[in-house]
Length: 69
View 1 (cartoon, rainbow, N blue to C red):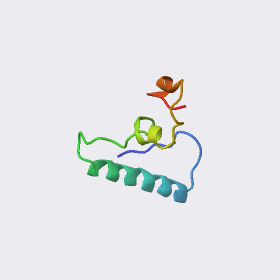
View 2 (cartoon, one colour):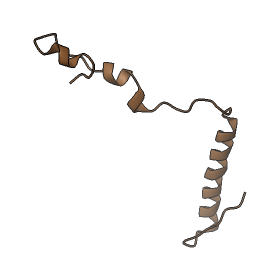
View 3 (spheres, rainbow, N blue to C red):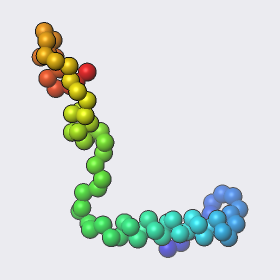
View 4 (cartoon, rainbow, N blue to C red):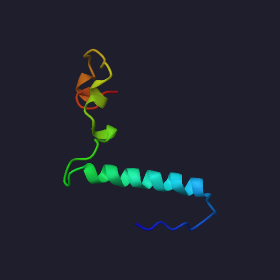
């Protein structure tokens, strides 16, 4: 692995800290099996829609059958 500083002049401590983060991320990525699903995005989480209470049924209830609001 090669790391190149393209801007600035980091101290040896700053460079060591950055390298530790990069190595930790690489180690975490290598423990995930290939093809495993990643973390779910909050936008696609179904509980996001069901987390709020919906209003009681009324004349316009048909318009709220899919998107609450």
